[in-house]
Length: 102
Image 1 (spheres, rainbow, N blue to C red):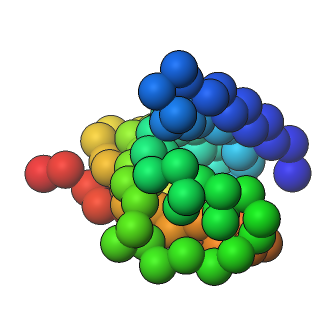
Image 2: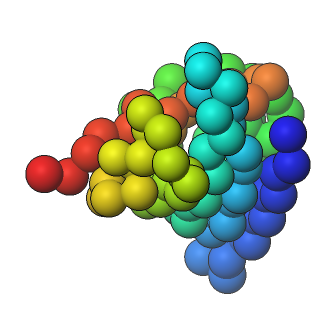
């Protein structure tokens, strides 16, 4: 699936994310998810993450604001969702818990 991930290191040592990814639902529908986010941690924690070490997510701040786009179908309700996410950086990727703002 097409994807793009841009990571900008800010002057204060935090990282700004700009991500676009295509998800495929169980029924085959394609969903565009785009999000911006920020990760901030003390320099020592950032270095451990950069080395691929697993770091408890309580040691850093990783938050996103995702948006979803889908043409139609069972997941079309996602087009109207405002959400936030809390992330965890793993050695082989990132996992997010995403919450709808009601």
